[in-house]
Length: 219
Ligand SMILES: Cc1cc2nc3c(=O)[nH]c(=O)nc-3n(C[C@H](O)[C@H](O)[C@H](O)COP(=O)(O)O)c2cc1C
Image (cartoon, rainbow, N blue to C red; front, top):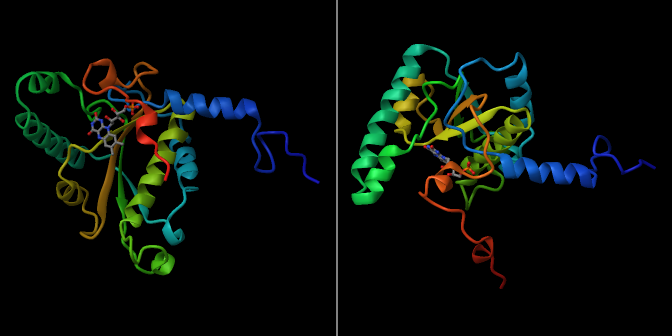
């Protein structure tokens, strides 16, 4: 019989591991301030390999990772961010507008790695299982992979910042990927300048974490 007391074997996890895992969840942050030094060799591959273990509807594995290295496409992504960020600012009034203007909402300038994550709608993968009535589960599957990527990165001391203040079509065009690929996430990845247990938007008074009990019901 396999001994099930270690967090390193047989798919079981001891209390110490569980406590550390919860600590990882507590300290995962959206990072917008990065050091510019490159990632340690091999660490991005390790993180991607972990993210590849994610669940997906019908086992369709619809995620596609595009590392954006060239200055041209990076500049186009930065330009769509700037346009969308200005438009977002224009949508707020008064104190909210003043606060929004002070937020730093991307690490596009400093993060050594940029990763665009797409959903590829391949009807053959998974043969449609699980998505006849909920086709959106294909994109949900990509979000699962992004979430795993985020945690796997943080466990290795690597920070991730999700940038959604972008026009997805502009990113598809900038990266010259097929038109039917849907942008799910644009990730800035690198070593964070600092660590904090509290989300930055909470620290800056934009939005607090609210009571979890208010989000839980039974029927
Ligand atoms: C789908 C998604 C899109 C996001 N887009 C942005 C963004 O464009 N810019 C930004 O600064 N943060 C973005 N964030 C980060 C959130 O602001 C952040 O997760 C939230 O404030 C909680 O902070 P924490 O991740 O540090 O816990 C995004 C997060 C998610 C999940």
